Image (cartoon, rainbow, N blue to C red; front, side, top):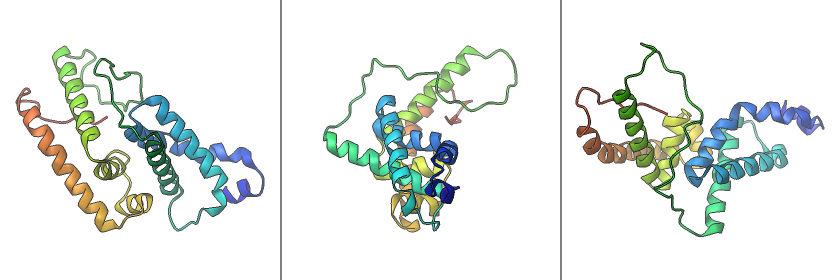
Length: 195
């Protein structure tokens, strides 16, 4: 497909990137913390990937190469802005985002359980946001996007050993942040729902 695009059939490019749109957007969002900025970063990453498609070598997966471009774009945008991003505590996250289907035990949801799940999800999202960038990017790629150690290493231009160390440290940091908070919740329900 890449060869066809390079030969002039540019209409195929959208088919090529379609499976990776969510991954690129989620990586951008983990850096930008703002949906509009994340969309801009993702769009710019797709444009840069299109213009640099001839430089893609099949040594890595296309998705890894694409996520790497998105990471570089997010980093450079943050450097250009030169400011620390702040989020308003008055803003509530949009509930209309991408959700994964869950197994339904009962059609009626218990309100207290729904509230507890929402609180835990918010705690987890905040804890991930609080991670230093070098640990957050590894955690998001490995545990959220489910890339392999090698794919993560290629996307971040680091060694597989560094991926393992950073992932381990990120998980320890998250555990340290979340354990005291989760202890205060209902002791019967100590699971962490994933996005």
